[in-house]
Length: 394
Image (spheres, rainbow, N blue to C red):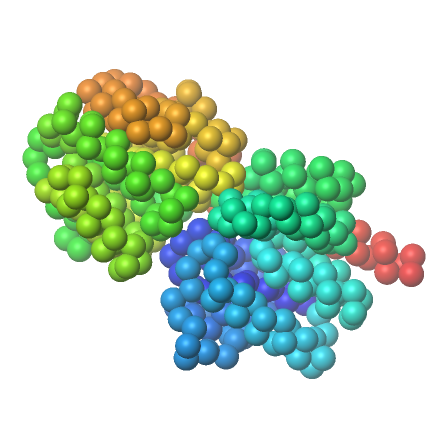
């Protein structure tokens, strides 16, 4: 099929949704589909086989688009609306594959041009708005109604996790729905030494905690730092390394670390390439995901599980739809509980090793690139059959 993919975010970047979109394009391209990607102007230029990348026009007064809802995204989504309308006048497509909020645009233009669309649902827009903007909570029924209408119009929906799949089924139990979880991004077992550029500044005899990801508020970095104050007083050799985040976010959290008196034990490494992810994970003793909001599972969790290192995470739906007590150490999203988890894992090497081994076995069974390809291709096979049937009936 000739597929138009809408990606309303910077592309390419080494973070969750852009990584997932890259995998999607690679899988669909390998299956023989002809792809066009319409995306934001920001991001690294990459080459993908069977895919033409079209970028929106760069606006000089809009830059540094971050994950999550923002006025900058609204501006570029408006630009995406007009660019999409223009593109559909000039070219014909068999299908629109719309990621996140671009599904609302796909629903509008899909009806106008009689083009079926897929809703690639990495998150619930109504849920995001309700969490981030308290003043919008009275309008949540309206947002949910609009989200439901898009789901019901879609030829198929691809939720990224079980919670979103349940939301979709609640909207329309008959819609074609194919859950497509993220996967581990680690390469097969390798004995290669850690290159100098990927070495963390770790002192001998320390127990090292590692967080990887952006530093948005919902990630729970405040919770992690507050808990680390308590844990590092109990276990003197604890050290914390944080990879990821914008310069502004790093400066803010570095200032907080200074205020908490833990600056000598906390290092903000900054952004690092995904290609070196396995090197960083293997240098850690404890991997943390302190998320305090949301219900879609962080992409990093799958690589955490595959790393051979123990995962400490908050006992929230965002984690528990993948994690349980047999493969991770789960704690309540409170400072005391997180601190207790850090202390327990820092002082119990056997527990760390047992949980890490069970986690790695689980991810190798269920969350690999091969599993991603298989699930996506199966969904598209059914989708193509449904579209062909509807065209015959028309």
